Length: 311
Image 1 (cartoon, helix red, strand yellow):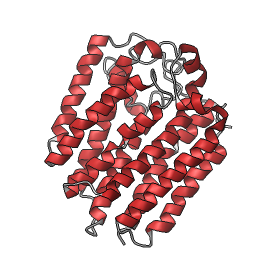
Image 2 (cartoon, rainbow, N blue to C red):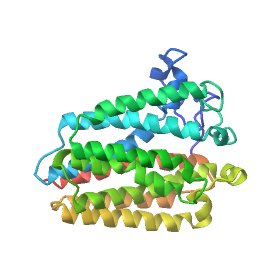
Image 3 (cartoon, rainbow, N blue to C red):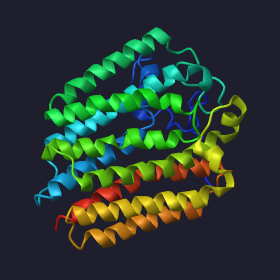
Image 4 (cartoon, rainbow, N blue to C red):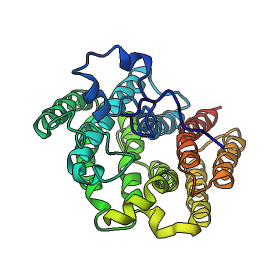
């Protein structure tokens, strides 16, 4: 059974990597902002970047090519910055809720390390950097990027109204699949829409696993999640979510003209997802966190599958 990280400082959230080497090199005044942007927890940046990579790879594969390095770099930086902006906005909206949840009480806003005004200015700065990156792309991609702000702005409120905020996170976090595809081809194909749908179901699965860490606190303070809704039926639901992920990936492969190498690679994706379901113990927060983090590798495997489909 996984054990808590004994090297993690006591004031770090339980899902944090703690004071990594580069975090320790930051000036004391900058550290709370780095935590506000979750720079100590890079898993979210990876989960935001991989759908962008898939979209780029799918678009490039249709002309028997590979994603341009310049676009990979822009989307990588964009994922880092916009994930930070999203987390900052989420923390501004949820500051009172976070103060009541053990896992989030030490975050910069509820703990008083950063004021609401300071967080607001930090959010604006990140959005400006994101905009500078966005205008490097074509008009359709710029439009999609601006449209994504509606999802980003609405997501933090979903847990107050629906048991399915994880679905809305999926809509938000996988928008990059459409942007990546549009950045190369200048339009959105049916294959790109299926790729986006695959990401939505994938996120619905892994974020349900993540939400089980906060199940008891969420119930006490009255916020909703798919973990609370599904309870002991979570494994069955994950089976359905991940089956839908694989079906959409298969459809994207057919419409995208993937070669034969794509299909055994997709089998590896299926095994990786099935292994998560088999290993899951929803009553063990450390188990949930470990399996959630494994989805960084899932995203990589899906991206590699699309690249293999070029051959």
